[in-house]
Amino acid sequence: DHMPGMNGATATISGAFTTTAYSISYAPTTGGEHVTGHKWVVHEELKNPGKAPLAHGTKVVADHMAGMWGATATIDHSTQETVYMIDAAINGKLMKNHKWVVESEIESVG
Image (cartoon, rainbow, N blue to C red; front, side, top):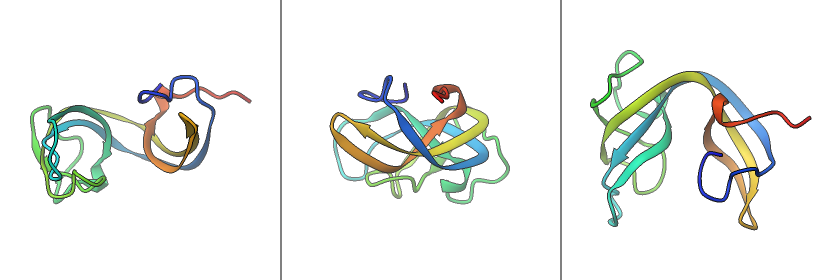
Protein backbone atom coordinates (compact mmCIF):
# COMPACT_ATOMS: atom_id res chain seq x y z
CA ASP A 1 0.00 0.00 0.00
CA HIS A 2 2.65 2.47 -1.10
CA MET A 3 0.88 4.58 -3.75
CA PRO A 4 -2.41 4.68 -5.68
CA GLY A 5 -2.99 1.43 -7.57
CA MET A 6 -0.51 -0.49 -5.46
CA ASN A 7 -2.76 -1.49 -2.55
CA GLY A 8 -2.83 -5.29 -2.50
CA ALA A 9 -0.63 -5.64 -5.60
CA THR A 10 1.78 -8.55 -5.73
CA ALA A 11 5.40 -7.51 -6.22
CA THR A 12 8.78 -9.15 -6.53
CA ILE A 13 11.63 -7.67 -4.54
CA SER A 14 14.59 -6.91 -6.79
CA GLY A 15 16.80 -5.22 -4.18
CA ALA A 16 16.92 -4.45 -0.46
CA PHE A 17 18.98 -1.87 1.40
CA THR A 18 19.33 -0.61 4.96
CA THR A 19 19.25 3.18 5.00
CA THR A 20 17.23 6.21 6.06
CA ALA A 21 14.20 6.96 3.88
CA TYR A 22 12.52 10.36 3.74
CA SER A 23 9.08 11.61 2.84
CA ILE A 24 9.61 14.97 1.14
CA SER A 25 7.68 17.89 -0.33
CA TYR A 26 8.94 19.79 -3.38
CA ALA A 27 8.04 21.86 -6.44
CA PRO A 28 8.79 19.78 -9.58
CA THR A 29 11.52 21.24 -11.80
CA THR A 30 9.41 20.14 -14.79
CA GLY A 31 6.48 22.30 -13.67
CA GLY A 32 3.15 21.25 -12.26
CA GLU A 33 1.63 21.16 -8.81
CA HIS A 34 3.69 21.22 -5.61
CA VAL A 35 4.16 17.62 -4.39
CA THR A 36 3.50 16.99 -0.70
CA GLY A 37 4.58 13.85 1.12
CA HIS A 38 6.40 11.99 -1.68
CA LYS A 39 7.51 8.62 -0.32
CA TRP A 40 10.40 7.66 -0.44
CA VAL A 41 13.78 9.23 -1.14
CA VAL A 42 16.78 7.52 0.43
CA HIS A 43 19.64 9.34 2.14
CA GLU A 44 22.06 8.37 -0.64
CA GLU A 45 19.91 10.21 -3.22
CA LEU A 46 20.40 13.57 -1.47
CA LYS A 47 23.14 15.98 -2.52
CA ASN A 48 25.72 16.45 0.25
CA PRO A 49 23.31 15.31 2.94
CA GLY A 50 25.62 14.99 5.92
CA LYS A 51 24.89 12.43 8.60
CA ALA A 52 21.56 10.58 8.69
CA PRO A 53 18.88 10.98 9.81
CA LEU A 54 18.14 14.57 8.83
CA ALA A 55 15.60 16.51 10.89
CA HIS A 56 12.03 17.28 9.88
CA GLY A 57 11.97 20.59 8.01
CA THR A 58 15.53 20.29 6.65
CA LYS A 59 15.94 21.66 3.11
CA VAL A 60 17.64 19.20 0.73
CA VAL A 61 18.26 18.62 -2.96
CA ALA A 62 17.18 15.15 -4.08
CA ASP A 63 18.15 13.24 -7.23
CA HIS A 64 15.50 10.54 -7.08
CA MET A 65 13.40 10.86 -10.26
CA ALA A 66 12.48 13.15 -13.15
CA GLY A 67 11.02 16.42 -11.92
CA MET A 68 12.94 16.13 -8.69
CA TRP A 69 16.48 16.47 -10.06
CA GLY A 70 17.87 19.71 -8.73
CA ALA A 71 14.67 20.65 -6.88
CA THR A 72 14.92 21.97 -3.35
CA ALA A 73 12.79 19.78 -1.11
CA THR A 74 11.73 19.81 2.52
CA ILE A 75 11.90 16.69 4.66
CA ASP A 76 8.46 15.86 6.06
CA HIS A 77 9.62 12.88 8.11
CA SER A 78 12.05 9.98 8.02
CA THR A 79 12.20 6.30 8.82
CA GLN A 80 15.13 3.99 9.37
CA GLU A 81 14.08 0.60 8.07
CA THR A 82 14.85 -1.65 5.15
CA VAL A 83 13.90 -0.14 1.79
CA TYR A 84 13.05 -2.29 -1.21
CA MET A 85 13.26 -1.93 -4.96
CA ILE A 86 10.35 -3.86 -6.48
CA ASP A 87 8.89 -5.11 -9.74
CA ALA A 88 5.08 -4.96 -9.77
CA ALA A 89 2.12 -4.79 -12.14
CA ILE A 90 0.22 -1.60 -11.27
CA ASN A 91 -2.93 -0.61 -13.16
CA GLY A 92 -1.94 -2.99 -15.97
CA LYS A 93 1.58 -1.58 -16.36
CA LEU A 94 4.73 -3.39 -15.28
CA MET A 95 6.91 -1.22 -13.08
CA LYS A 96 10.47 -2.56 -12.93
CA ASN A 97 12.91 -1.51 -10.24
CA HIS A 98 10.47 0.88 -8.57
CA LYS A 99 12.27 2.81 -5.85
CA TRP A 100 11.40 2.72 -2.88
CA VAL A 101 8.97 0.78 -0.70
CA VAL A 102 9.73 0.48 3.02
CA GLU A 103 9.47 -2.63 5.17
CA SER A 104 6.35 -1.40 6.99
CA GLU A 105 4.46 -1.07 3.66
CA ILE A 106 4.80 -4.69 2.61
CA GLU A 107 3.86 -8.15 3.79
CA SER A 108 5.12 -11.53 2.64
CA VAL A 109 2.67 -13.71 0.74
CA GLY A 110 4.62 -16.86 0.49
